[in-house]
Image (cartoon, rainbow, N blue to C red; front, side, top):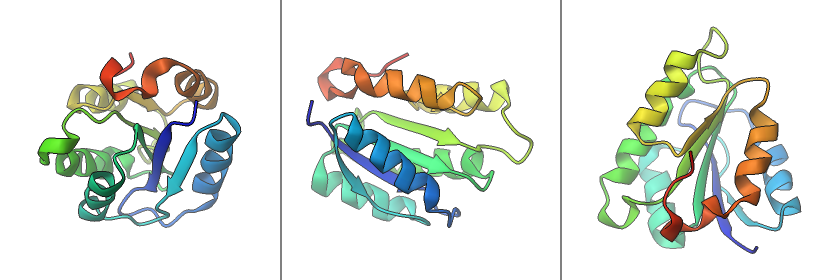
Length: 142
């Protein structure tokens, strides 16, 4: 496989255990991972994406603010011509009230290739990263 995945926390999320777990999961699946860590501002995320040109960007959040932070990060990525088609997924605790289909659907509508926020999130994420969804030329997964 050997795809490059850029893994990042959201701007307001200081949690790191989720990032370590996801990095190990991605590496176990055969992907190379750049883990930017916690509290990554959208501009830094976009700068790193421009520099590294990953096959996939994974945003993870635990603090319940992914629904607010995710679209800001995605808007910064999409504002840069070389990053318009880059697949971006988001997962974790997106809202403070737990999984809400309305929020997940809004994030998909905003341009996230997939949203992982419920009891099936890890299973679906594993399936996602083992498909050809990481190929930038293949477009986004549904």
